[in-house]
Image (cartoon, rainbow, N blue to C red; front, side, top):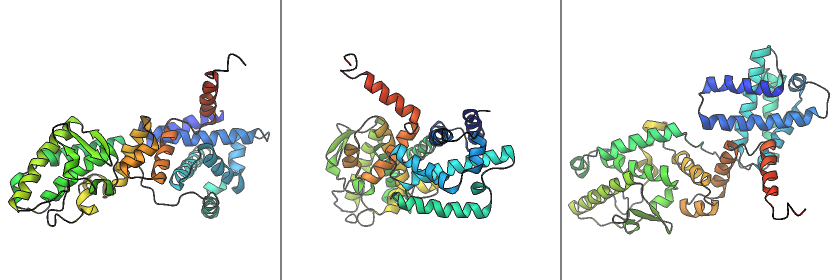
Length: 341
């Protein structure tokens, strides 16, 4: 069996275990594809077959593959490399299950610990961003969040809200805010800065950080209703607020993260809106929106944008040497000077 066939079999086995989500498959294929390129380059330096190479590769060689991965994709975030490390571990587990033996650094407890320590040192040497990056939600999770948001928003009991029944207002506001994050990728502060004057219920648009964007039809209708509910609430309690979203117990207070994202807990088990925002940012990057525009619009800065771009590149297979060569060659062939050379 050739190495390529081995990897194809590994991918089939892995997807059966974790679910054959297209995005996950592309991500994992991209990472194992870089490892494949690395192995082929190393095999040129030796007459050994690929199984022997994989089983006998020492710590330094395995760490070289990590560095190769970082340089191949111009990777800046540790989170992305950690997934690569995990995929390689899964590949070696697959080889062990199939052949009954594999590389000691992925087989014995002592060697695993030794390699993990060396891996951590390599991560530091590569100056990768160490921040705790939240993984973007997947498409099916996004749909579940959307369904739950619509259920809360469309089922709002205005009387209970005006009576300040516990949790009614918080869940309602949270559902509206989460829909904005899910579609626009906004950071918390970008939402807190929104004023009622930023929302135009005639044109169904919203001004966010000086960018005027249209609301999707469903959200536009829900925002119209929210404006009416908001007005009624303020009038009933004799309050005034220029905020688009306010705290029902103190309209002058900024909304805290719990009230903004409480509804997420039911779907994701936590209130980490960053994972939701990354999903939207990846969509925007995938549509060719420049990173600096997304940054100015969402309030997310370079680290998050770099991480999301890495995910886009992985899904497109741009870490693969073969794919990068194809793209480069195609661009060179379109050069004005190509025919004249």
